[in-house]
Image (cartoon, rainbow over all chains, first blue to last red; front, side):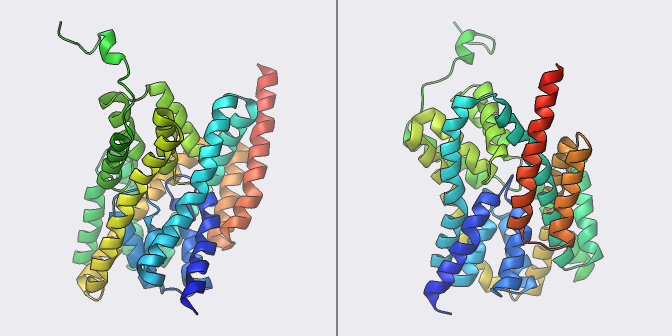
Amino acid sequence: MTSGSALWDLFAVFAPLSFLTVGGGQSVVADIHRQAVESYGWMTDAQFLDIFALSRITPGPGSLLVTLVGWQVRGVLGALVASFAIFVPSTVLVYTLARVWQRYNGRLWIRAIETGLTPVAAGMILAASCTILRAAEGGAWAWGVAILSTALLLRTRISPFILLGGGALIFLVALR
Amino acid sequence: VRPSLTSPASTALSEAPGLAQIFSAFAKIGLTSFGGGLSGWMMLEFVQVRRWLSETEFLSGLALAQAFPGVNVVNLSIWIGFRLRGGRGALVAALGMIIPPVLTAMLLAALFSELAHAPTVHIMLAGIAAAAVGLSLQMGLRAAWRAATGTMPILIIVITFAAIFIAGLPLIWVVGAMAPLSVLLAYLRLRRQGDAS
């Protein structure tokens, strides 16, 4: 594979996903995993999970997973191309829609789009979470930590920082 | 006269900030946010502390940012920036939200590749990943709870989930089929409710 075609592949994979990202960027994780590991063979399952974990300890808008996949494939240039592909297309779309939205705010079809996208987004986000867990190392420990952290987030106002640190600690004690 | 929290002066919006101010404010939020809950933080910073826009303006922007494709935090940045300084404000706000974290991620990746073969680091990252799934899982559960208003929305949630997770179909097919269907159903339902009331 030439370097030019690797960069094009990154763009071709992530630019369409830019339009499919709904919510915090978690909805496309399952598809990024499918393409990066199975379709293109850019990395192994273990490498993907390392990158996923790294993207979660990096501050910022949740889609930095894509930046890191680009980095893995083609270094700095790959990271820049992948970031451009995931952020710019949807950004241009939303900017255009923001102007339309201001004009037609409150109309029936606008409310229908808002209402109609919610269940689709919910299904996507849940599928993405389960896909990650299916591929996760640690087996039952991974499911246990994930369920515990979900319950704490639903029931308390705990800082996500403490949860991530706690997950690292539990794995360190249980699996080392 | 000492200003108090209830005086009209304190609820008035401050002057629209310059482009450099917009960039640094968004960069600060981008760089200090971990895990989630970002929109609450943005509301505190831009509505309560800096008074750049009203709560109503912010909340309508939040609804828009969540309804449309794209990372909702970036969408919200575009909306707020657009309100503050038009097209250039939107550009600067989005860049402030994206560029510093992208550079941080690249720096971490560069440092991390040195550590990748250390088994301790690997196990800790696996633990962080498992805990981080909780962040998206609770978001998905909250979204599902909010969306599950009737039989059809529940069916859409279940079919979308099963098509991606169990059948392993490409996301673009699933969304391409489910999103228009779901929006159409929502349209019909809203119109019926409109007729009824």
